[in-house]
Length: 300
Ligand code: CP
Ligand code: NVA
Image 1 (spheres, rainbow, N blue to C red):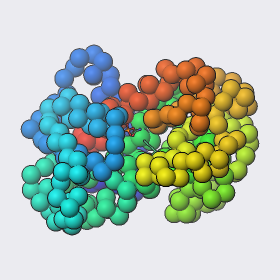
Image 2 (image 1 turned 135 degrees about the vertical axis):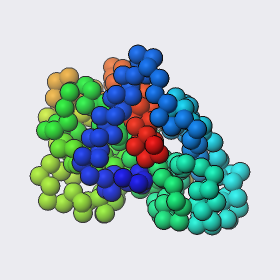
Image 3 (image 1 turned 90 degrees about the vertical axis):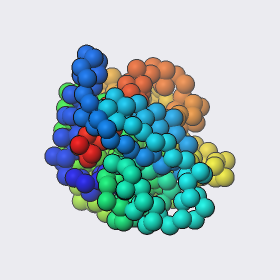
């Protein structure tokens, strides 16, 4: 494994390997056992969109591994003034040991990997959010002590999260049922990947999707870059809220996951959010451990 550009590129064993290492690093962190696997190494963190979790977990994560982060806002980089990604990739490859990038187009991330000579990590694009789903799988596996055979129901916008969840679940033996309205479906490339897999279901009925679900997952109805569509989206997603009534139809004791930030009263009620706060913040914490595992795997 040379990069983490999207989960479609990874084998099941590579995903499980990252989760196992993440569990170990979490154990070591909790028990104050130092693990300076990346001593002396630097990672550049390029952000073209806002972030709380991704930025802070990568910055503290590399520090805990003995390395150094460089926060690079694309507003301040020459890339923001039109320097081509091909040139940026070749320059940064000479200073750094790895790059994490959060941007709009998946092609930009793939181009960094193509032209650079150091590991590239996708910290979210419009197409996918692999780091988040690795943390999600880690959290689900901690909770149920397995992944194989569990069912995840995703309710809402067929966005970057949905794309990565479909791939991550199916590659680890989970079932996934996605409920989203017509016109807001996951990417055709991902639907093609899932086609014919008996563990995959796509519906426009949230009630059908959550039936027998072990995990209920949702995300914002308006992702970064879609702010102008917010009002139209609130209308389109009426009926796709994760609320107490919908949770009644999932398996008893089902977990709730959300990548955050959450918009209470829209995709999830305050009541459901607070009832599952422990699971949601464990999930947020696991970003740290999962990404440390990704950095060690790629940069050691
Ligand atoms: N879930 C997630 O990626 O959060 P941030 O946008 O805060 O990084
Ligand atoms: N779908 C959301 C995820 C945020 C972590 C977005 O892209 O804004």
